[in-house]
Amino acid sequence: MLRIDQYAYSNRLRFTHPVEKFAFAVITLIIGLAASSLITSLVITLLMAGVVILRAGIPMRFYLKLMSIPMSFLILGVLTIAVSFSGEPFSFLWGVKIWGFTLGVTAGGLQTAVNLFWKSLGAISCLYFLSLTTPMVQIISVLKRLKVPSLFIELMNLIYRYIFVLIETADKVYISQSSRCGYASIKTSYYSMAQLASNLFTKSYHNSQMLYTTLMARCYRGELNVLELPYAFSKKNVALVAFIDLGLVILALWTGGVLSAGGHS
Amino acid sequence: MFFLPEVILEARDIEFEYPDGTKALRGVSMGIPKGKKTAVLGPNGAGKTTIFLHFNGILKPTKGKIRFAGRDICYSHAFLLELRKNVGIVFQDPDTQLFSASVLQEISFGPLNLGLSRENVLRRVNQAMAATEIVELKDRPTHFLSYGQKKLVSIADILAMQPTVLICDEPTAWLDPGNAARIMDLFDRINQEGVTIIFSTHDVDLAYSWADYIFVMNQGLVAGEGIPEEVFQNESLLKEADLNKPWLIDVYDELKRKRWVVADMPPPKTRQELMSRISNSP
Ligand SMILES: Nc1ncnc2c1ncn2[C@@H]1O[C@H](COP(=O)(O)OP(=O)(O)OP(=O)(O)O)[C@@H](O)[C@H]1O
Ligand SMILES: [Mg+2]
Image (cartoon, rainbow over all chains, first blue to last red):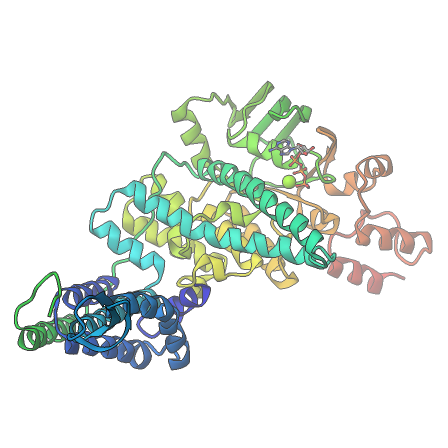
């Protein structure tokens, strides 16, 4: 998660208009979810991989590693769909007989499973694109433009900032404990862990109190106003996004027949 | 030298007790001279941070009064806002002060609260970043900054509000010597523009060469005050507050004892001054 955050601030698309990136990710995501063709999902997955690796300059190895994280969930989930259990032995491509019933894979099940697999992967790619190229600060500023209530915006801001303070604090406490052999045996580990947790809690509480104090000292009046810098829209990028997504829609219509929300082929 | 300076911030017999019963201040009286650089010294737990928090109305004394520009401060919403526009505090720990992941947004918070226009705010943010030399950190997220860099951002936070009194809680702690010197230079420049500076420190050398006036606190009381030359000659005060002598005074005293320098001059305030006196001595 921290690596993703680091890339979000250092990738080559960092200073592209956040709305462009957000729109690209979300529109492509919707197309991918709505389209019912395998080829569209494949294209989206490859497209996002291409953009992330070639345009944004994220190392391929890191991206592949990221893609492999959801893989085990995906495969498990998809397997349960591919495998079915029925009294009719004829529709199975492959199966084992148990007491007159067949446990196996049908052609329909397999197809749904494969479609679902790529559709999920496509959707995940879109979200990875967004989180690898767009820092949280920019995502929040897009949400602000979309008129998400300021309470959520402020909470997101604070939570995001203080996740790192919390990690840093936990890190420091952990280092100081382990340098004094706090994790030498199972018994001391349990003890140290409990100490760490309670310490983090009191520190966070203290931090929140201090934060309020420091905000008050800067004339806080109940609203966390901050300056949004205007980004310049790039006509080229907008055209590119429109072109690519239009292409995807046409591809989806052409290969999948109709756009259906359910996604059955 | 000091000729009855105007007092901008004044604490009168301030007593304060934290909710848990710690008596942090036990009758503190301080008059901060206007347009000067004041240092507050004292061991850990002496009450430096606590008195600072009183100066911009964050804490309300159990007893006593704070006066700003000749008026008692009252704790109404409007008055406090006005006070906080004028008295800015840079806190000891930048991690509790920086609330935003973006350096630019962080610094813009204060000036936006002053009700300035966006252009004005942006100008002030840029000025503050230039003054603290953190322009190149503009697009970095706060959580990737080193502690010293965060400290610089937290100073820029308050600079951008352009207060008339700038309070800084241990400005040089955690800064490397280069950055510490740069911050003190920055304070000098702001001070020359008429801003009153108050800072707390554990660095006696810094306080000695840099401050116009010094308060020494100990156990919730002001143990002594005066111009640096006087405070650091007061052996009993230094002993009481557990403070070392600045090395300049130590060395100078030794030189005087050995009659290597002319004795009837006040001790030098900077390294250069000491050097030139040594080379000019008979
Ligand atoms: N939030 C708090 N709740 C209870 N007691 C506190 C709190 N903050 C400070 N104190 C206590 O008040 C006294 C004065 O603390 P203060 O922080 O003002 O000292 P300080 O001079 O700033 O010390 P340092 O040099 O360590 O920063 C100390 O005894 C401290 O333990
Ligand atoms: Mg303190």
